[in-house]
Image (cartoon, rainbow, N blue to C red; front, side, top):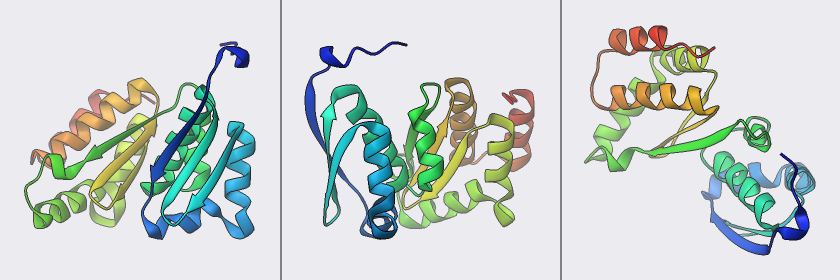
Length: 175
């Protein structure tokens, strides 16, 4: 898709990030932040746990998603995949599904699985990267893969057996 930058308006967006992820966003000697700015054609500044992004609208939205992905536990390398048009970010807030911290902790363990195997199977069958961080499960992938990965995560949240989720993934393999 050809983008006409003259038709885009200048804008500013602020993204709150957990304090323990600020260093990852900045990178060693500011290298990650600098690379992000270059690749997204934006200007960014970090104040405490707030990242301010300025630039042309389309680029600001891309940069915002990358920052949100890093804030939700993805490495900058994986988050940068969002620069490609076919990749999107989906964030599932477990607190919207579960009533207590204990329930959230239990479901996070179910999504990760023993030795990370469940998360690994979701990634292998859908081509979607999965990050379990805080009270969220974040997904980066194509539209088709995201639909299947999200459904698999929702099945685990709802209490489906792992074997049922694995069968669903096998039936709906997108890679």
